[in-house]
Every structure is written in C-alpha cells, then in structure tokens.
Image 1 (cartoon, rainbow, N blue to C red):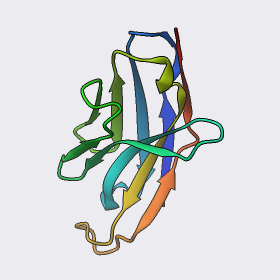
Image 2: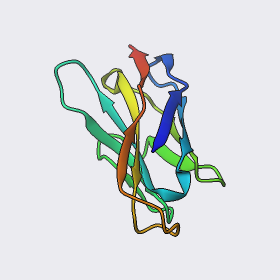
Image 3: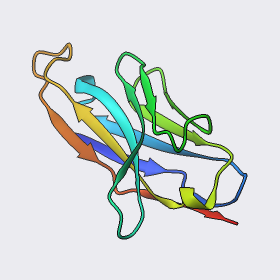
Image 4: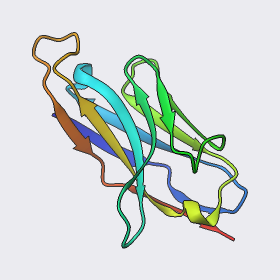
Amino acid sequence: QVQVVESGGGLVQAGGSLRVSCAASGDTDCIAAMDWYRQTPGKERELVATITSSGSTFYADSVKGRFTISRDNAKTTVYLRMSSLKPEDTAVYYCHVKGSREMTMATCYSFDSWGQGTQVTVSS
C-alpha cells in the first residue's frame, strides 16, 4: 500500500496563488498516476488534474491555464500550483495515488490511496 499526506492549504485572496503538495510513501515503485481532486459540501468529488508515470498531464476545463501539476525527480511528491484563484476554487483538495501491476516491479499490484485532504479557501 501507499500512504498519502497533503499539505500547503490555507486562506488566500482572490487573484492570489497557492501551492499544495502531496507526499507518497510505501510501495511507490508501483505508482502509475497521481491526481488532485477537490470537493465542497453537498457536491461530488471532482477531478482537477492528473500526472502519469510518463509525465503526461490532464486538467479540468475549469482550471486549465491557471493550475499546474508537477512532480519531483523521485516521482513520490506531486505539486499543484494554483494561480489566479477564484472564490469558486474553495474546496478541500485531495491527493489520489493509483498503483498498477503493469509497473516495473514484479510484485506491483493495483491500488487506490487517498490522503485526508487540505482546505483551500479563497476570499473575495
């Protein structure tokens, strides 16, 4: 399994910037992709951005051009740089880690691990 810890959330004014981080530990050689989701009360969890083991990225239309997902050289920490923040970006941001048996290690297996989330609040 993989353990996931998010950090970096906080309060920021509209138009400002913030970077949240996600650190993974455990069977990190099996990680196929890392994602950022967000959720507000009463709404479904929404995929914000994805980065795969090969470096391919995906962004939701609502954040495209404003948010950037990146990864460190060890491929165990993923970052989400949020710029030009809007009040509607306010949410709990969750890191999701996907494992795959198709990775290089023979002992790899499929799994989905979630962090506890970090609160991002954007004031108007």
